[in-house]
Length: 119
Image 1 (spheres, rainbow, N blue to C red):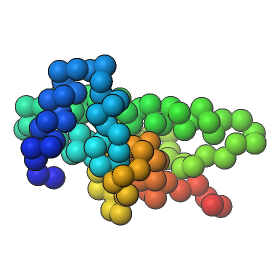
Image 2 (cartoon, rainbow, N blue to C red):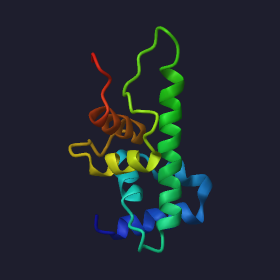
Image 3 (cartoon, one colour):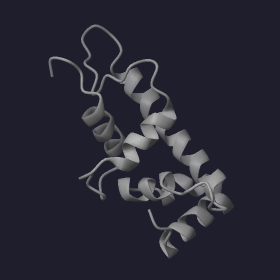
Image 4 (tube, one colour):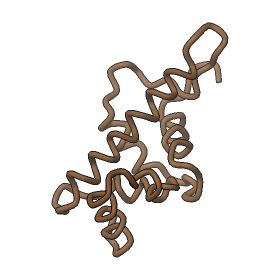
């Protein structure tokens, strides 16, 4: 993904004001920008830190809401899947609606890669 003025501004805003990060990443498209920053980019540590934190939170929330005998998971990734693998699945997913909430985009990508058997 090419770094654009919007991505630089978004990463700069997240780096400068961590408390406002959630307000800055309002859509799947916003999260894709952060998760797609390359290691050569000076903003990589901040962008990837936020991206990985968001992925962790989305997966933790999914685990919490799908726990219990009457709840059904949205997706079924193997326990050995790393968060970095989830990031790669997320950034390479095609057809993600850019205007949806970031958690929806993450879970849609995870479901497409690791659907639960029988669903």
